[in-house]
Image (cartoon, rainbow, N blue to C red; front, side, top):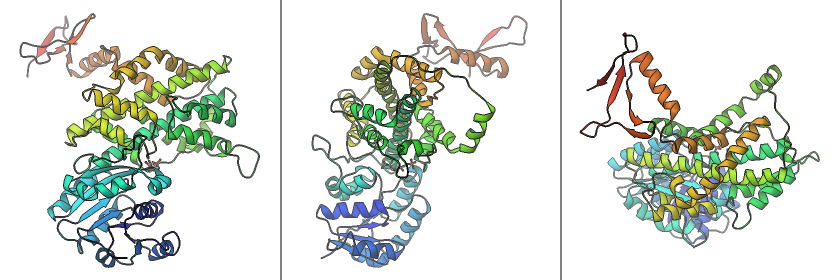
Length: 495
Ligand code: 6PG
C-alpha cells in the first residue's frame, strides 16, 4: 500500500467518516484510536479493502506516514487534544504538521499554535462542519494557522470538502493561529440562532392549532428552490417533523422532551461577544433559551404557581404563515449581521485578518447553516467589503425596510398568544437599536449613572442633531452635573 498521505487520530464517527472521505478521494490514510478495539473494528468493517492503514501505537502511526507528516486529530476538545499533541511530539520533526479538527476553544488553539511553533511544528486548528454525512461526503472546512501549514494541507482539504453550486470547494484559509476555530465557533453560534428562530416559528404554528405534518408541509414549501429561506435547517425541520413516533400514532416531535443540550460553542460565542463588546441578542437568546429548556423541573413547578393569561389566535392562519415567513427571513438577516459583526471585532482584536465574503463563501455548502442566503452574503461583501453591517447591504436593506412590520406583527401576536419569542424579538430589537441615531434608553441610563455615581456623560447637538459634541481637536466632550449642589451646575470634564 505504501506510505500514508495523512493520519487521522480518533475513530469516533467524525474521525472515521473523514478518513473514509479522504480515502475515497485517492489518499492513503493511517488511522489510530486510543482504544485499540475501535481501530480494529473499523479496519475489519468500513475500512476493509480500502487504502486505510490501521495502527496501534503512535510511533507506528507516525512511521506509516510520508514526510512531512500530516496528522489530523479528531478527538474531544480540551485535554485530549493537549495530551495527543504532547505524545506526538516525541516522534515529530521540524516542518511536520498537526491539525486539530475538533470544536476547540480558539484561545486554546492560539496557545497550541504558539507552543508548537517554538518547537518547529506546524499547527492548523480547523473547523469541520456538516456532521457525520458532511464529514463522509464533503464538509465545510475552516482552517487557521500558519499559511505554510495550510499550503501543506490545502489540496487534501479541497478534495474532501463540499462543493458549492458553482463548483467552488467549501474551504479557505481563514487566518493565523485561532482564526479557523473562531470562525467555526461563530458558525455554531449562528447555527444556534437559526435553530432557535425556526423553533419559535414552529412553536407559534403549533400554538395556533397546526399539527406537526401541516407545519412540515409549510417548512417543505419554504425550502423550495428559490425560496429566500431555503436552507439545510429548514429542510431537516420539514423532514423530521413528519416523523411518526415508533411506539404510538403520534408525531415524534410531540413526544420529544423540550430540552436542548449544548456542548459549548454557543456559550463561547456569547462569551466572546461580551469580551469584545458586540451585541448579539439573537444568538444570546438562543443560548439562554437552551438554558431555560434544560431547567425542566423549574418550569414544571412554575407553571403551577403562576398562570400567565394569553389569548387564542383568531386571525387568518394563511396570512400569518406568510407574515411568519418574511419575519423569519428578517430575523435571520439580523442574526447573521450580529455574528458577522462579532467576526469583524475579533478579527481586529486577535489580528485574524478575516475576510467576511470568503467566510460566507465557505459556508454556502457542506455545513449546518448552508443556505442559498449565504450566496447573497458572499455577493454583498464581494461588492462592498467595507459594509458597516450586513443590514446595510442594499438587497437586505431593501427587504428589511419593506417588511420589518411583519416581524413586529409576528412578535406581537406570538406574545399575545403566550408564545415566547426571545430570538425573534432579539432580532427585531437589534434592528431597531442599530438604526437609532439616538437611543433614548441610553440617554436615560447615561444620566442616571452621572446622577448616582458622577460617571459623566457625553452630549449631542440637540434633538435634531444626533451627532456627538466634539472639541476643537475632534475629541468627544465629556460633562458632569453636580446633582447635589444648589443650582446643579454643569462642568466639562477635562482629563
Ligand atoms: C457542525 C455542528 C457540530 C455539532 C455541534 C453541536 O457544524 O457540524 O455544529 O459542530 O453538531 O457541536 O453543538 P451543540 O451540541 O452545542 O448543539
